[in-house]
Image (cartoon, rainbow, N blue to C red; front, top):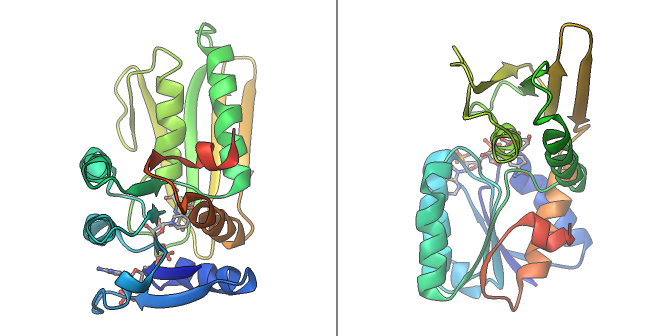
Amino acid sequence: MKIALLGYGKMGKVIENIALQRGHEIVLRKKSNDSFEGLEDADVAIDFSIPDAAIGNISACLNSNVPVISGTTGWLEHYHNMAQLCEEKKGAFIYGSNFSLGVNIFFELNTYLAKMMANLKQYKVSMEEVHHTQKLDAPSGTAITLAKDIINNSDYAGWAIGNPKEGDIFIDAKRVEGVPGTHTVTYNSEVDAIEIKHTAHNREGFALGAVIAAEWIIGKQGVYSMKDVLGL
Ligand SMILES: NC(=O)C1=CN([C@@H]2O[C@H](COP(=O)(O)OP(=O)(O)OC[C@H]3O[C@@H](n4cnc5c(N)ncnc54)[C@H](OP(=O)(O)O)[C@@H]3O)[C@@H](O)[C@H]2O)C=CC1
Ligand SMILES: O=C(O)C1=N[C@H](C(=O)O)C[C@H](O)C1
């Protein structure tokens, strides 16, 4: 299939390699100052850009009838507008805070654990995410998904990266050179702690998941998630 890459940085380049290995063709490699020329030739677009560019990129795809996969994080307050545009245009759209198979299994584990811990008030949950120093957003999109899944299955009301209020999940967002992405969820009590952790060793898992999502969405209409793609 013909793929438009919207964002051609660390992720865009790994996605390109995996897409080429799987027999696909890249028809557009868009960076910050490039136009959308070539988008009309694409069967699907994959957006891994920056928070401020995601909405423009996704809208351009939906307005051009090109199915779009977005892995860009840090723009989620506008998610419903993009989902609505997708419905209006009868397009196809997937946003995923994390496209790796491992993290999507970790999401399921986190939800299962949240349900088990919901009534055990002696445990307090917190989270840590560690990423490379070039990351523009904090907390990570993955940490926000993990927090929302706990909130939806417990009495926790929200999340915070600094000064959490009573009832908030504290997320410690750390930036360390070279780290692709590590997420830990900890339930701590006075007598013990339970931890689940996902460590990405490199960016290949994120990129492979995005290409698999792009292959999956061809011929579909609607707003989907990685859970749909993986059948979880
Ligand atoms: N969902 C997931 O599984 C994952 C998500 N991510 C997310 O993906 C995004 C990209 O990450 P990463 O590749 O590491 O970041 P990089 O900073 O390495 O790359 C960002 C790219 O976006 C480009 N860009 C900037 N503005 C635009 C625009 N208007 N249109 C198109 N491209 C633009 C930049 O171009 P230029 O160089 O010209 O500025 C650059 O090529 C981040 O939001 C990150 O959080 C990352 C990994 C996994
Ligand atoms: O910016 C990154 O690198 C990553 N971003 C995503 C996020 O914000 O969760 C996914 C992954 O952890 C890498």
